[in-house]
Length: 224
Image 1 (cartoon, rainbow, N blue to C red):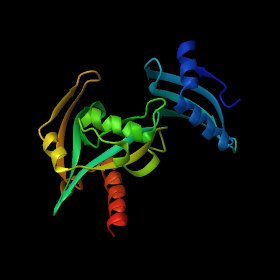
Image 2: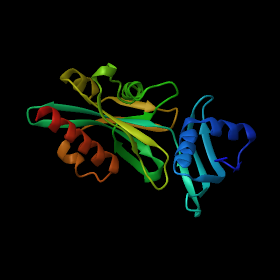
Image 3: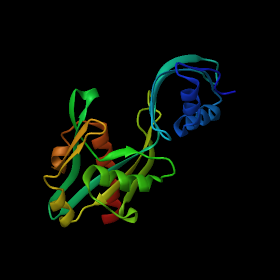
């Protein structure tokens, strides 16, 4: 048995967590590496009726060589990140979202992003998240796939992210300028901003530099 003990929540919450896709995938990874989950102590679990948003747990794991370690793990499902960009002559800019982030104690400038819901493909999720966060509606076949299931943080997160890009036209740029979206449901206040490529390079975030590297590689391959 790869999971011996789960504590910290009610039986119904435990069963929901056990059946979540992100935990099942974690269990399969442990099996693949000849490990064993000795105990999972759940601290916090956020969910809807059908979907696990996230869970924080202390996991005690026995590795293939017999070593035992206990570490906190942030369990979260797969996600998508979208880079909406605009190119014209010498102009290269990216449509970013500015939102409140508790972990940073203020605001953050990010690419549109979000979780993949059940029975939804990464491409479908990217289309939905782009529209929800920017108001831009696109056909899924217009989304450029830059890479799939990148591990967010090997030391503490189970989440992986698939990357997409979308080339904006002038009409979409004009409609997006000065647009303001207030997401009261989750406490995030989102503003949109077109940020020049040169300015993005000065922002020291993993998401931005990883995304720009993937986009640059794609453009070099397609444009020679």
